[in-house]
Image (cartoon, rainbow, N blue to C red; front, side, top):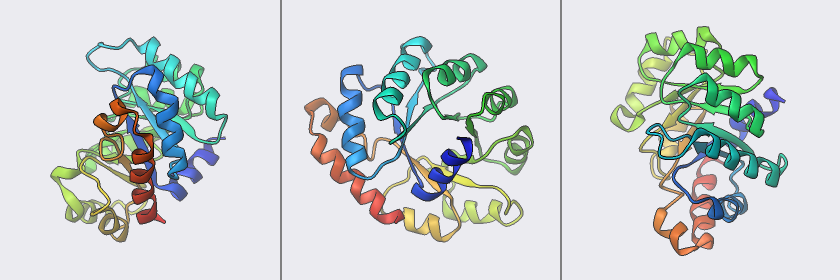
Length: 215
């Protein structure tokens, strides 16, 4: 199963980040993105505790059970081993973090999930790979850009990188040309005003724009 998820990430290239969306909007939002070609969705945990870990895990479970493998659901902003365990129990398939905490990476791999920790320096990147990471989320990418990706990819050509932060349909092609493996995209697809209005057709159209670039 883990290899299926890795292959899906490599093929589809886009993981959509969903943060702060009400429970009742999750399924129509995810279905709108699925119609637009999205096959990987990340629900984020709340680092400040405004939403409990258990509630987030329940939302992951709701989506995982709804899609039954049509779309892979995972967790984002994963900072603790507890959150990894909750995600596994909820049916999540991958773990994405803003940092590269070795205990989170190792717990992720032990439970058979795909590991995508965040890192930026060569030391952080290699430490995460040694701990078992499958992909490295270059974050925040918007502050470094394509030139930085090229610089770190030269000596670290064995690493599969995802660009997260400041990614849009206008710069994705440049990242792909430089050797990026995929992207994490949040508010450029999951626009809060569209979700609040229930304009899911517009979200489908946004998703299609991004998918067209990577195809």
